[in-house]
Length: 411
Length: 92
Image (tube, rainbow over all chains, first blue to last red; front, side, top):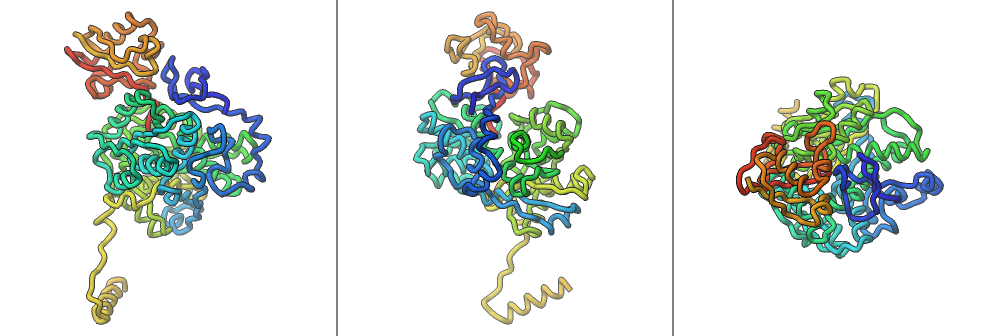
């Protein structure tokens, strides 16, 4: 890490807990000394390290050794031939962050970076504004690190996500309102109490953690950038960091400079970024979210502008899917590949299906779908939509009757 | 119209660390001008120099509602309204 730098005007700031430029409110981003990193970060060096996201630590913004979340990342990249056949594409891979450690979503990546850095900066209380997954991860990782935590979430979240924060002993504050209102409150609270808000004053460090997902994808593909990556968009931050990961690996000579597209996926009930992309706009109009994909329900996406820029630069596309298509996406992934994703995963699969059908992702190409959270966290969204179990007495006769009936139906 | 403006940390150096500032203004645009008259420099940080509109990196709320869902910079104000200026690059 060299400094924090404003993405808009280029002014530099010291590496403290601060996230926007004083002069134009532009986002601050961590910059690195790539010439120096190039000397130690070779394929061989990386391959010799433990299989966690920290094998790329030169490109993650902590000064010393990480102290929170050593085991996070290096989730499976699963070849998905059955889903590929269903979606009509030659080759498909699933980057499976439903099994990320410890809270089953990609947010463990950003949180391990943010909390490691927060400890370096001397914070003892951490907090976040969250649509659920981030809250779970902050609560769990803070507990393990001995930090006090407060998580702020919309009051109407899925039970699974609320319980998954409470169990770790975090202070869980439910806000009566959308995520955007939670976020606004947190922007006002951050800084007031001397807390490290992972996605407010710690955001420059936090956001960099997402790059590890892209680093892993390229390494797991045999040091190659995928032709197509489909990424769910809430704030749009993950999509921008996936591109940054491909750019950094190219710059360091770890992968060849091959063309790639990073496509964005949203739910139709909250699609400010995809609506703008489809209309050819480079700015978005904020919306009031209404979708079962609550983890993506951000009506004023902080990185919407930059996500649009990445899609334009890489010649990529965005699209969005209805609640029914989201459930269908969840079922497709589960039935074809045995992976149970949360609603955001249904969004990604549904949008990939649309982009392939429209020829925007050519059928002869290869694509990676970023599946970011586990389905057990959003059971509310699929209960009653995935069939019903059949109940019988512990009787062989009843079972045989049931089986005969089933065979008659499928015959 | 007397209204209260909640100043973000980002701008507090300009307001001598004041968090709440009362100004007289009939619209959001007028409130920003009034702030600028008291604390020179605020307008340039909040508004885009070429378009004169609120920067994409800044969110402004009147009584908890984003002004982009109201009438933007021309959103009218009434006695006792509270304006919040928030950095857009947060969350997610």
